[in-house]
Image 1 (cartoon, one colour):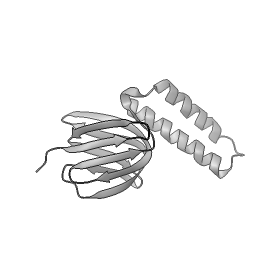
Image 2 (cartoon, one colour):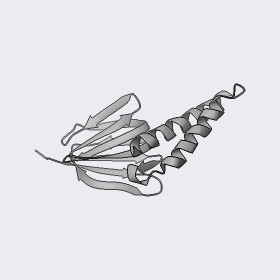
Image 3 (cartoon, helix red, strand yellow):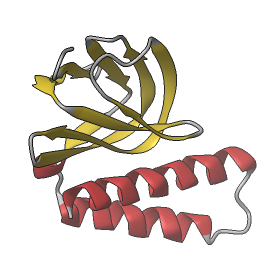
Length: 133
């Protein structure tokens, strides 16, 4: 029985994570899901949220902005639209993005597309702050 699983997290810009880990917990479209070594084959749509991975007692966080995950018994490949490691997140920038999104959502004259865009921006900023804190 394998004791670790390979996590590879990529964005269109770069390879963010590539290492052997003990566990992965990802924000699936219908809720979080966990992956351990020798997990069954699985494909998932990711939502905006926090991907956590554990290596021993060390837990690391990555804010992801949607994407897909492919799980095999040996590997988890996450293809994220955008992603940032917790230590790379600028908290002040995330707070400003949250304030802008909240201000935009107060505008009663917004059409559905503008509301969806602002709500998504708010969700991303909140995920970034949660990952960094």
